[in-house]
Amino acid sequence: VDICGVGEIETRHSGIIAALLDPQGNHGFGAESLKAFFRQCNLPEFADNCDDCYVQTEVQIPGRRPDIVIQGRNLCVVIENKTNTSDHYMQLADYRDWLEKQRVMNKKLLYLTYGGYPASDSNIKFGEYQSISYRETICNWLRECACMTATPAADFCRQYADFIKNTICRENIMSTREDLKKLLDTPEKIK
Image (cartoon, rainbow, N blue to C red; front, side, top):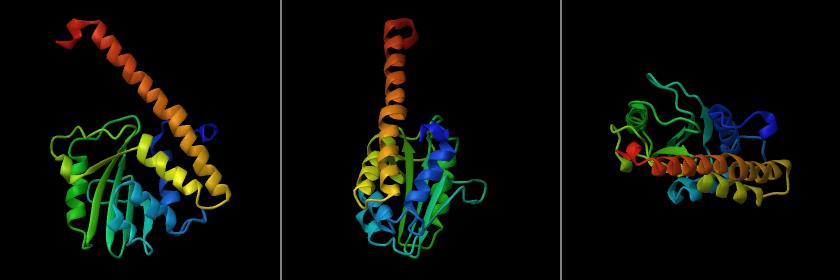
């Protein structure tokens, strides 16, 4: 994955995740990978309604382009993926407002970050979206997918999970710890 230039590029991660989630994809998982994802997100009622779903990236909605949108007859899910930035002003609130207009029973706004961090925009409350993480949600989902079949897609899921765990999340943890140590070593910065 790293050799493909994925690194911390948000759109590339979104593309990979969307391709693996898509029940129509050529990965060989069918709808099982999407069902597994919803189970990892603690959304079992969504897992029961995803056989007719399709997944798109960068969907045009009024004034915005969510990273990943999952739609089906009974559900609509927006995933906002942040790898190296935080959410933008009113971004999640705009996605929430768009989701509210969708005529489906199951709707959810997921905010994906390395560590499952909360959104920074005060225009949306925590209960109006759900934080998920690369470190736990995505890695656990990829490992579950890797156990589904003995295909190249399963091998890719295993390798992608290892890449996330050993490269992206490790660097993110290390830089956070280093930043915290620097901050604590200089009390005048705390003020």
